Amino acid sequence: MKILLLGKNGQVGWELQRALAPLGELIALDRQVNAQGYCGDLENLQLLIDTIRSIKPDVIVNAAAYTAVDKAETEIELANQINNLAVESLAAEALKCNAWLIHYSTDYVFNGAGNKAWIETDVVQPLNIYGASKLAGEQKIQASGCKHLIFRTSWVYSSRGNNFAKTMLRLATSRESLSVINDQIGAPTGADLIADVTAQALSKCHLQPQLSGLYHLVATGKTSWFEYAKLVLSTAQKSGIELKVKPNSVQAIPTSAFPTPATRPQNSCLNTAKLVTAFKLTLPAWEVGVIRMLAEITP
Image (tube, rainbow, N blue to C red; front, top):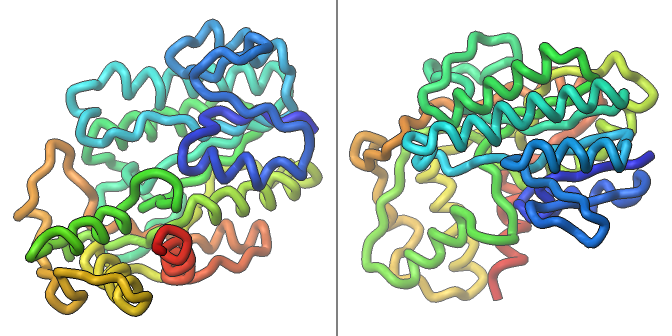
């Protein structure tokens, strides 16, 4: 099996390099042209298409995306180019070479109303440009007729690069006070979990093409950014890190106290029953992955 991975250096892409390597020949690309002349730049459609046609992959895994949620409000064309138009081209090329297309989407396709975890068939209504661009990409894949797995996920983190936990640790060791939003709810989900589930799903899909479709992929349980921050700080405190802001001193604030250019959904909970049933998975609690990640990033 020949696997083409796009976005190899992102949070999910980095973990996918590890998880997909045992499954076959892995060609992992970023935006730069490599020694073979291959390129995974979603802004350069012709070069991207030429790359796919040269490689003739059995699987295309698209871990590249425009993810600057607030900047997307003004960079509308760029967000649409990467998250929608480029994805449409990927789907068309996947169909031509009979390849699977694996793609990642977001809880931001929903409006965040209510308290129930969203299922795949719920009505979509993005609140911001980023969410709208990701939804458009989903729909282009579904309309293309290619074999596909679309994984909607949320609150993605990894030990590589910047993340919410690192930000909380930095602020709690440098500031005298810390305020965190408490009315947005979701499940922090590790990039390593997303990559491992992708690899497992891909292994099954090769034998069961009827599993093609849209799935929700997050860790189990739910929390707020406020409670998430408290777990990060209490775990750090137990490991001996000196904090100016103690876990119980973190202040809870509503979303309205921290306005941003893009509106965020308040309910980002995703129901994973379809995924768990189809691929016979057991998904870990969100706390497990966060604590493991903290062990990797703290001294």
